Image (tube, rainbow, N blue to C red; front, top):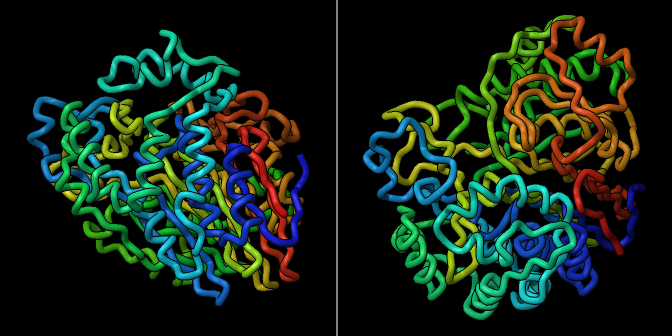
Length: 525
């Protein structure tokens, strides 16, 4: 794969059909925001194991006038989702009706983003490709087939329409089989006809609430109607040559920024050498310790995230905790979650970084029969506790691994980047960003090159330091000698996430790249 260049606009997504949908919107005069809605909708049809309109979504938008703002489409816990609902349980279940305990916020984020007067394309145009792919069908990819095979046993037993849609012949769909989702196609038509608000207060909301209640979810029509997006100020931090931006809690964007701010203070002379990898891994540990202590619903914490990122002395002190030759012992539990990151940039200067998820593959496993929507299980991350970090309370927003990233370089470049991968998202962001920004590695190579991840990766649960094949042999030995719990995981694979990036160049041109570990593409015009 090579870095894609373009002159008028560019889009990147972890499925090539979604990227193409975004590119076509740009070519028809649409904005990067409209392109991202088209991408997001298409992903729900072609990549339903990773994302869909039954999940949450986060946006970072850089406007042509230089303004940068965030949209959080994240749903809170249902009004009846309190500790009494889980009496006798030690934890919120990861699948099933009691895991589907939060409102889905993705569609509300689309609506908020499209409120920009510059967005003039009709909604039926933006949802067109998604409707076609859901109705006529799309070939199942190798990655999608692998997940269906692995997860089928636990998913087909859930109430709802999972087996009818994803196992229509009584078995998991295999690579090359055609996946059709006619109920989802009709749902998207309803949204195009009635407007996106129908998801929360219209006829569509009534059907959603009816299905959710019938399947045993605590989410009600009242919960849907009470949902609203938020527009928090993005977090930011300066580093050498750039200012970095990400989304505030309940996302882990704070950790993503902190890793790069700490690394900026450390010595590392060459990409993918011991100093580079060790420094980023140790910066990750420092960032995750703070993340796990403080990140959650902003209404339940008084920690000053932006204050820390804006305090050079505090950042210096955190960086000073990192031993340049020795690993900090790492017993921390892993965070879960899989997702889709995507982005677009247009000729007017907009750059959009987006990320959506239903949390686990196929979310809660509840596929609503009337609408074909797979409902998320983001609320399964809540703790069944009276107080403290991420404790379950009605209306509370759960911790999110999701975080879309953006960088404004001093030389005028604007970079949007991100990945799926739960615990790995901040780490993969750090790997590809430092390769590109600090060491001048080609954008596509920065994504394609071997990666590492501390803790849980996609499809795994251990907390070792995992490294793909392809690094200099001295790196593996050096990391082990420094005390890292090194685990070699073989050739590059989806275990390390599906990353992507695009850059708007100072001359108005574009570069884009997509992860060969995914089914994606970067396409421009």
